[in-house]
Image 1 (cartoon, one colour):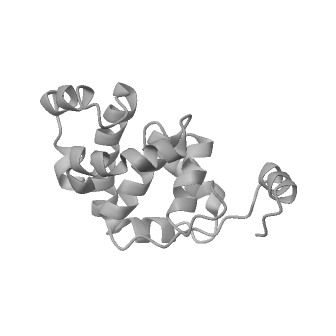
Image 2 (tube, rainbow, N blue to C red):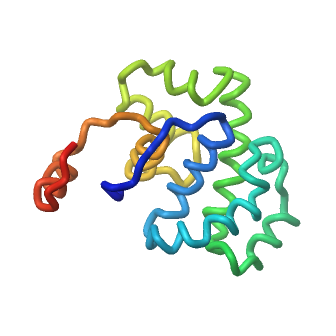
Amino acid sequence: MPPNMKISVPKNDDEYFERMTKAIFQAGLNWKMIDNKWPNFESAFASFSIPKVAKFGDKQISTLMKNEGIVRNEGKIRATIYNAQQAVLIEKEFGSFKDYFGSFGKDHTKLMEDIQSRFHHVGPSGSRTFLWMAGVKLEPTVEEKMWMSKNSVSE
């Protein structure tokens, strides 16, 4: 996670969904490359409108797989659609992503575990990155503390 990146709490559920999607597509890739392509992702994924992306089907997947402006990873594309469908369920169950996050109180470990079980293509690192990108104040892991001390980054 770039230490100099300013993070704010998302304004709405579509922004939470966008940040989750970005965490997924950044995984294993150069973050700067994803940032440079992000306007293409916004266009390709209907400005991250949860209801719209949740309805994407084979036709849209085929179109996305031909889109040279995004990362054409079918697993990540399908996960994004599935995750939009799960976001619809989050809204029905909790009212919003903010309320979903709040239902775990300060237990970020349980929240990360739930995110990993609920959403596709979001593992331990991805769920942590997503929470960080959503403005959740996480306690740095041992590895992060070591990296921060080597790179003179304060918490």
